[in-house]
Image (tube, rainbow, N blue to C red; front, side, top):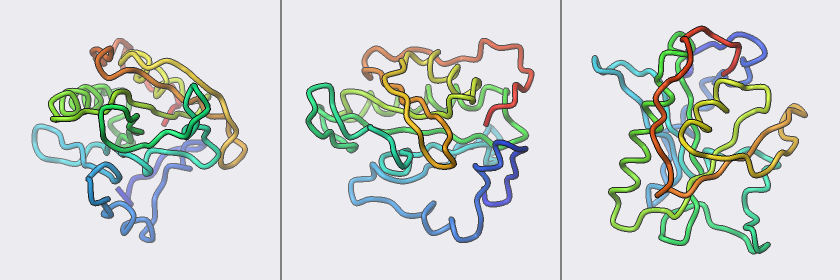
Length: 176
């Protein structure tokens, strides 16, 4: 993943060697960290971020509808933060939607699944927003984050999330 290079302006997603330790770190409950997404041949084609790893500085994600702070980790009353990253040469190939579908299925199978999932994408990242919307997440907040970019926070109840199969024509649109 540290060798992946995205075209501008999405080169903000590029990682460096200093990011490796953070990619390997996991919380004790397994809800914070990064999971690889492999294709049918076992090649790394993406990643799924969970918990704190899926959040963006400046995100209002810790405030619930009642104003009380929400946890990001497991438990029936909790909201799990999720994020997706796709290898640059696999953008618009359905990797993000397939990874999100697999994640939703795995979360539903947990003994105590989270009540909802939450994700963030840059407002200018039409491809990421489309994948999240097809899964059933809806926009809940906009905020300014790193680089003065505008981000959209989306959320959906786990039991209401659906299929995320690609509905586009596969052409790149300049996102992630």
